[in-house]
Image 1 (cartoon, rainbow, N blue to C red):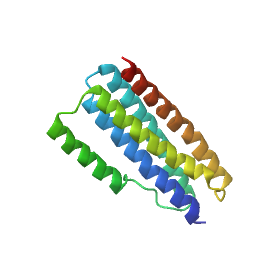
Image 2: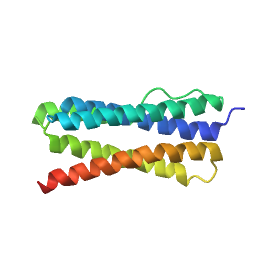
Image 3: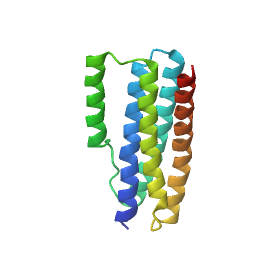
Amino acid sequence: MFDNKNVATLNSLIATTLDSIDGYRKAADETNAAGFRDIFLRRANERQAVVANLQAKVRELGGEPEDDGTVLASAHRAFLGLRDKLTGDRDDDAVIAEVERGEDHIKSKFESALADGDLDPAVRQLIQTSFASVREGHDQMSALKHQLNAS
């Protein structure tokens, strides 16, 4: 049985999480600190597991899982690449600030999905489980940003 409402919600979260993976990989490429690079790559891998779980649920519900990020994120990354070329702004403070901004976005998307009272209980549980990873990543990036700002 195809479940359009739940599939649409999951696919939206998949696209946003794919954006997050791309953002973390870009941040890993741009950071100057090996420690940050490792953190970003671990988060990207963790988010890849979240995507795989969400995609499996979409298939189970009879839908076609999203396999690409959002157009908005692609435009944002292109803008950031252009900004970096023009300003040379590739310091770790700027990278962490952008990652944290992305984390604010994905956290908000998951919170909105969880606020939807019409989700299937199994879908809600999967989103809640996935949100634990999102919340942890958000909190870690926020702490890093505040730690760098305090230095």
